[in-house]
Image 1 (cartoon, helix red, strand yellow):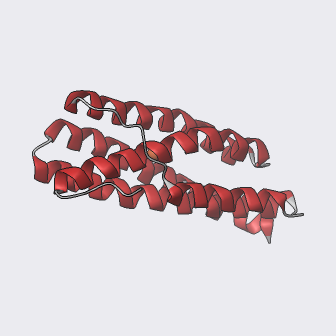
Image 2 (cartoon, protein in one colour):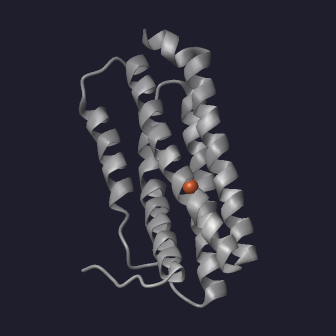
Length: 164
Ligand SMILES: [Fe+2]
C-alpha cells in the first residue's frame, strides 16, 4: 500500500529507505558476482565494493538514528530488478571472459542507479538543512562514482578485449 507523501521531508525519508533496501540487497548479491567473475581484478573490485556497501548501509542507519527513525520497511524494486537481471546472466551458457564483460555491464547499471538516488538524496538533505546527512550522502556518492569508474577501467584495460 502506498504511503502518503505530502512534503519533501516525507519524500526524502522514503528515498533513504529505498536506498537502504537497495544497499542491503546489494550486500547479499555482491559475493555472488565476485564468485562468478574469472578476472582477478574484477573479483577484487566486487569484494572491495562489498566492504564499501556495508559502509553505505551504516551511513544510512546513522542518518536515521540522527533523525530518530528506522530505515526499514521498504523494498527497493528497482534494485531487485537489476539484481535479477544479473542473476539471469549467470544462468546463460557463456564463456567466462564474456560473462565478465556482462557482469561489469550489470554492475555499472547498479552503480548508475545508486548514483542517481544518492545525488537526489544529497540535494534534498541540503535543501532540508540536514548538513551532516548531506555530508554522509556525498561520501557514499563519491564511493559509488569511484566504483563505477573502476569498472570502466577494468573493462577497457582487458575484459572487453578478452571477451571479444
Ligand atoms: Fe552503495
